Image 1: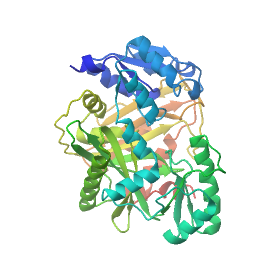
Image 2: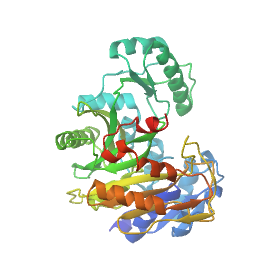
Image 3: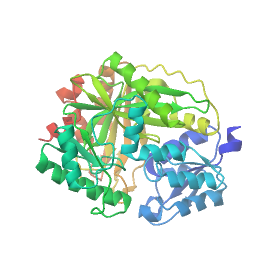
Image 4: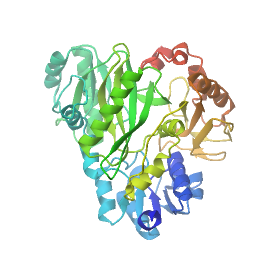
Length: 452
């Protein structure tokens, strides 16, 4: 039985994703164990868990990122499994190994798969060998500017420069010429040094790829099963971004043809097979909106922030599937996506410049009507602190088609009340009136054009 192999389940995370995982864990009859920092002691996820263990100060390095403290919390509570959520230790192969070595079940892919996909250059080369389309780019780490300049001459400008490790848009920028490349390389090198803890002057791992000028960011949700099958659960469009970071996602993508969608789903399955993937993961792609073609971007070896839009159009519970796969089950999953879903990330940030705006929440009123789902990490009286990502909630809407979802989105965004910290709900209102977004003919440069 599931309870024998997984429960209690320790959730090594915080906020809305911890709360969302707790909900499924408890629905399945398992005990949910939370860990929390001093800054998060009064958040809802702590109260809603069956048991909660304090693990240190607000600084994540001394709490949520402290492997020893998280493992000790698992030991004292008798946890049999660990769900990492996303962020923090979710894609840390060493943490996954430590969980397994401690005799617990890791609710995620094998550490070896995390390692393979964590390095963008290795991942890119592996995908190319598996027949997954990749952009023209470097196949080895670029460790100095002269190598970068030679690579850019071979690839052709414009080029995207980014760190070989890390995610969330860390160190990414576009170079149009040699002068721009010099600046972009320095930025990526310093970001790489911060990510690895190394010295930016001692050869940080940087990657160059041909830049697609009118690109859509589209990702495919996959599920790897213990019997070896890889199932594609549909795709999500994540092109509404600021600073290369997602802010609104939807499924299905309004900017791709059915033929292109099928090719992307098939490529994502090949990607999962090449890695021997197990559990929920995401194959991210860049789509050339003009040519209706795509290339592999990266693979995320965890649950994505935007997983609710896939759940809404498929009727599946991805956390439940993660748990069942971790317990050795191979459920008969045959997704038939229907309707349209949109997720708006509600951040504590300035809606114009998108700078974080933490503060105490004086009033919090979530919309509640048919076709609306809110995954929130806060409530009135809580404080959004500067120590963590400023995501407060995910406002999701579901409609019978995109027009219906857009209309529900306008109603839901207008009904969501947050008083206290700065928030981006006014940006969401603005987006829902933007002609490019409303028609579905947009790309990753949309937000930049809105703020130009």
